[in-house]
Image (cartoon, rainbow, N blue to C red; front, side, top):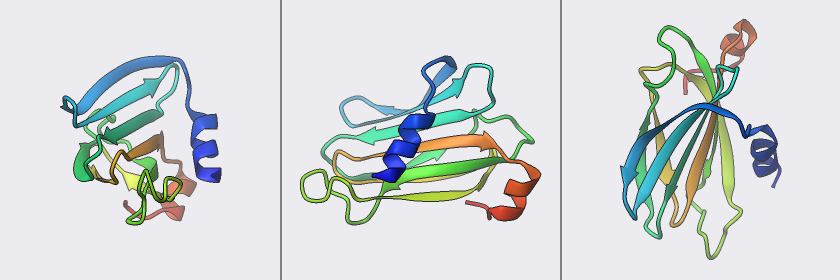
Length: 128
């Protein structure tokens, strides 16, 4: 769908740093990567065949900076067998002290793009 294409078009291949935020071997993982020569972060979370909800801490972000989070995620109807293309996008403002909830379908995932918020962004978006 459109959202998946938007995400893939924007994901860089050159990373300045990577951090594992959550990891349970064989169950789930969250990785945060910062784009080289950029303040943008890309955070991916995936799970095994069990649906689960995880908290994704944003403490890798710069303190004192507000970011726009573009969250590409499963919906309550998502299922890798029956409805593999069910997803939604949420957008809102976050800081390093925030946590994003990842509500993952079976074999599902969540992808987040975090970009420093402009003055316009701060007027256009509410806190996530």
